[in-house]
Length: 265
Image (cartoon, rainbow, N blue to C red; front, side, top):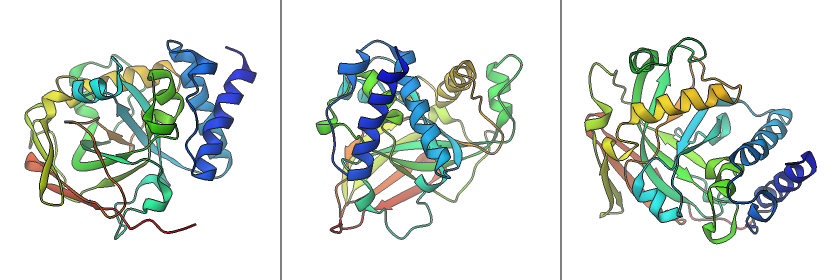
């Protein structure tokens, strides 16, 4: 895959983000199986954001739920980069005007207290690196029209990242077991998604271990202080302007995202 092709795919996705208008998939440039090329596009978009002053605060794991994989027609996880300006936890409303085609997922967010850069990334090592966890809603979004994506499309598009909301209640891994954590998510008063930690690659800590090894293999290991969104604990649901999403995530408690009425540009 040439640098020119990577740059063309990055420019297409960046244009969609800048204009708020979804674009055709980038698989015409990348194909549907070249994972390395897709991550090269993601890295180019990350480089551009960093050059503009953005700050990386962590990573998200995507496509961990079999239900979400079926929804999008893919069969393996991926990851994307979390930037500081994606965290809207302190906002009264999720700014719908920043989003194109948002959907909501209920997840567990892990905050790390140790780097996961060296040594054997065993299950014990992964658990020891987690400082605490909180309930989270990830607002996924796609710069690609109608969510018409293959795995290369979504990886290139920063794993279809949008924004995220974190709850305040913290638990350590001594206080709860992610795999056994139930999840129920509501839009208004309607139950719209249900699942558990076991829906996330069998265990959200398995997803975290996958990310630690994969991120390290791409030369950007996980670091102390970073946030990691586990991946969905159940099916994602549309979140148009005006929607109120509330997730109940076992002992972690509740987390809510109220989407603003979209304003004209």
